[in-house]
Length: 335
Image (tube, rainbow, N blue to C red; front, side, top):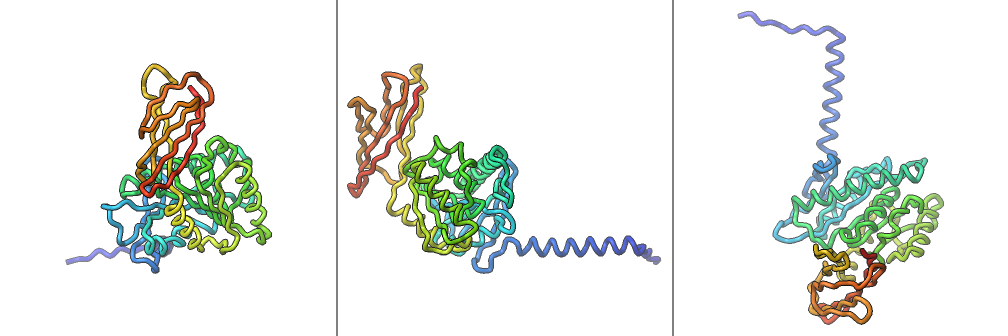
């Protein structure tokens, strides 16, 4: 039997060796990229189908679909930060405290030379769509609690966290920031969406010569816009120090009920006829709706017809199982 021997020229052999080396390095990097030795589960990469953007997810080893779980979406900063680096700062707490954490790949993170406002806002809107698509995809595959979803940003990731979190207080119970970068011109389209009941936590060090001024400017801006702000200048401002943020989330869950007023058209011919309801982190035992001019309702989902177009204030007071009372207000522009 005759064997045919393949003979490679020196140049082709050299190229093949280089390709093999690159493939080996890439394969080894890919294998270790999503493994955190401090937790039993791997960090899993996903691509959400709506926009085709990648995100990383850590799911605790004791995850059980029979129960609803909290979710934290984390927003990374610019290089050398990354979704993988941010996620690794949360995995041990996710494992020990019992929550899922996702990190999407973002575009609107502040770099050394910040872009013009219009360009940055356009990027933040892209990131907003990416964050919402990530949230939807995680919910599709996991049992996520509707009232325990949080949004966090570090440094340049603060822009995505603020832009998306403040505009969607109906989705994110609270927003947290560590050492945020900040320019008020990048957030001009959140003014009408701010919910004064949504807690916003910021950990910034005024002593930091480079980023301290950003933190001070954000605090001033937040207070002038009626944001429910929690300042923390005691803890470390490193991106990996997430313990104080987790403590903030746990305090919010225990002490600050999530109550959202929902106002929807009834589908009738009168555009001034609305049905009201609540999304709440507990089941109220009593309701008292106030629609102005002495008009009230004690039912859970009342239908009310306003007598004129214009601006109307709607308020609701609910009582919980422990006889605690909570009050919320909503301003409507009709029709």
